[in-house]
Image (cartoon, rainbow, N blue to C red; front, side, top):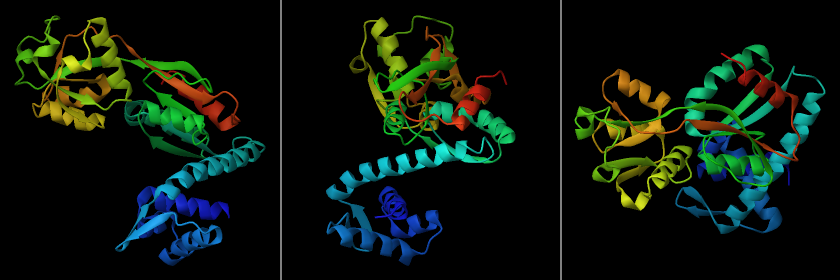
Length: 294
C-alpha cells in the first residue's frame, strides 16, 4: 500500500463520499474509486459498505482509519524533520485547537507567523479539548491548544495565555434586570451548555462543584457543540449560558446579551506537545511568536 492510497482512504472515510473526497484532493472520482478498490482488493477486506450511491465506513474501516492516520502522521513527521534541514524556508506545521482558541485567539497569531515565515504551510483543525489532546498524543498534530484540563502522561502541558469567562442571558431574562447581583440561584433557570469534553463546560462544572452543585442539579435546556450555537440560543432566550468574553462580545455590543455577575475565575489556555515526538523548528518558532505581546 502507498501513502497516497492512505490519504485517499482517509479523505473518503472522513467525508463518507467519494465525489467530495475527490474534490478535496483535486483528483478525479475514478482515481479515488480505483485507489479504494485496489486497497481493498489487495488485502481482501471491504472497508466501506456500499449503500445506494453512497459509501459508509464499516467496522473494519473504522479500525483501519485509526491506523492509517497514525501512519500518515509518522510520514509527515519524517517529512518535517527533513524540511527542518532547510531552516524555516519551507515545511508544514499541524496545529489542533479547541473552538474558542481557534476562533478568536489563534487567527491573529497565525497571520503574524505567516508574515514572518511565508514558506511554512499551517494545517489547523478544530475540536474540543479531549479531541485535541488525542490528536497530539497520536501524532496527528504537533501542537495542541486547549482551554480544558488534560491529564495524559505522554503529553507535556504548559500555560500559554488566559481569558475571562462570563455568564450571559438575553435581555428578556429575569436576571438581566439585576445583572450586578452576585447571588442568583443557578438552579432557578434553564441553561444552554457546551458538550462534555469542552473546556468551557469543564470550567463551569468546576464552578458548580465549588458551590456544592453538579450539572444534574440544573435545568439543562440544550447542549450544543459550538460557541456560536450556544451564543445564538442564549440570545434567543433558551436560557443562561457561560462562554468566553471574546465569544460574548458581539452579542453584548448588539445588546442581544447581558453579562451577569458570577465569580468565574480566569480560564487558562494550555499548550500541548508530545514528550517524545519530534519537535520541528517551525513549531518552536510559532510558539515563540505566539507568546509575544501583540
